[in-house]
Image (cartoon, rainbow, N blue to C red; front, side, top):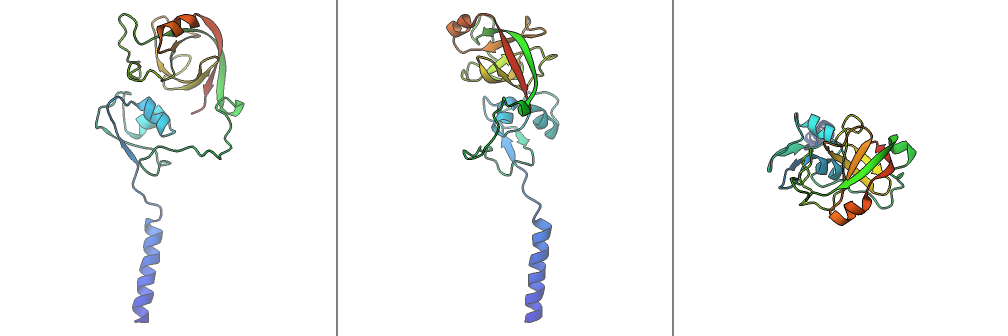
Length: 193
């Protein structure tokens, strides 16, 4: 009886060590209107990491497509930020890759000939509260998180034919707000992911 008990305990301890490091990889099933930029923000990761993890060649995803999530995500729920965490602000110098002075204009998703869908697949008509800027990808890579003076934290999610060099275009849901913005020289901080 004692030998059986000792053997049982030994098996339990061994299985604990064998299975301690394994857990089911987290995944996310794409729902209508979702894209990689939104998921990267939701799960506190980057578009590049999601693309690499899922062997994606483009940022386009399909409804009901199942994506693997990075290993730091232990379950299928979004990463929650603790209110008690003493985290440095996004614009703290340690969180900034580079700072650039840029010329900023504004645009809406409802202009004549506009589809409302950004280069990275964001649907601005369905998500009018998103903070998105159009950039020259040679200056600010698409998918980058940025802080724009007078606008706040946004994602570089679009391009534009007139957006070359140190120019950006800020998405605004209302035409009047975009018109009131006009053209300004602003400080843009490219944030670390």
